[in-house]
Structures are given as C-alpha cells and as structure tokens.
Image 1 (tube, rainbow, N blue to C red):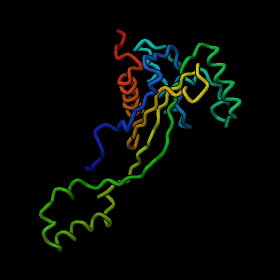
Image 2 (image 1 turned 180 degrees about the vertical axis):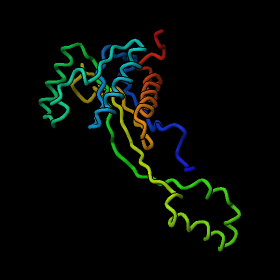
Image 3 (image 1 turned 90 degrees about the vertical axis):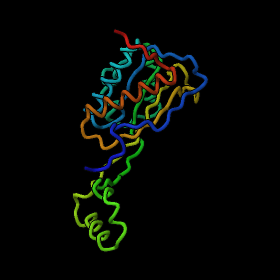
Image 4 (image 1 turned 60 degrees about the vertical axis):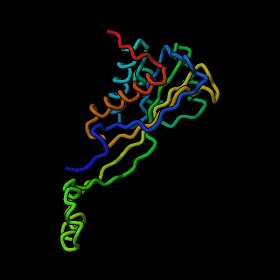
Length: 204
C-alpha cells in the first residue's frame, strides 16, 4: 500500500475574502469550469450549480450560456468585456470560475519500508531492503497534485475591487472524475460558507 497525502483527494490550501464585501450575497451566479476536459467541466458545473441552488442561490452552468466558440477559441479582452456586459444584462451579478494553476509530480513509497525500524541499525540489512526502492518499480508510484483556484467576481464592479473571494485547493491524482469533483465542490461550498458568502442552510 502506498502512502498518500490524505484520505480525501482534495485539500484546502487557503481562502481569502474581500472585506469590502462583508454581508455580500450574490443572487445569480454563472459557474465556469475553465478546462479543456469537457467531461470534468460538465460534472463540476452541474454539481456546483446544484449545491448553490440547494442553498437558495440561482446558479447557471456556463455550458448553457457560453457559445462553443467562446470557450474553444482564445478571446480578446474586448470580446470578454462584451460577454460580461451580456451576462449583466441577463441578470447575472456574479461569476465563479475554477482553473488549474499548476501541477506537481510526487512519488509515494511502499509503507512496508517505514515499518522495519530495526533495519536501520546495520548496513547490510538496511542496504538489502532499500535497494528495492530503485530496482523494483512496485515499491513506489508517481502521482500528480493539481493546484486549482476558485474565484468569485462581482459583475456589477468593473475594477480591481470586483474580486470578492478566492481560494486554492490541492487535488491528488484525480482518476475518478465524479468522486473527485464531488469532494472539490464540497470544499468550495465549505469555504464560501466559512466566509459567510453563502448560507449553510440547505433547502429541503
């Protein structure tokens, strides 16, 4: 069995809220998953929209709002601004966007190595055991940690003060998309609740 960071695949690194938005409560949020993995984007947007709706906030997936060419082709700042104005015209007052900021490769070693403390006392058994680390690939496994950032913007402000909240998360080697996204959405919701941006009361 390999030693991984945590039983959960998602870990919250930090969370920040703009104090100018104390008491802020968005009414209609556009949820955007910024990724070329369409399956992951779809699952993320669906689950986060559902979680926000359960807390009384009207939320919409970007899949239902953005045209295909808007997300598949690089846009100019002018085009993006035009889209923001269109969103505001359609009643959106906030946008929550999630994007991968970086990827780090890690190595996990077999837990058996760390259970044999007595091998440290003499060179021969110590070397005998630890040579397997580089001779036997089954003793270690490489995996990736994705650093993902979630950001909430106020669409009514068009300046540096429009940033309401930002948080970063580490996701360990996400193989099962549905499970990983579910954990990630839970972490986002928890952060927003802790910052008093959304209610923790779930509608029945």
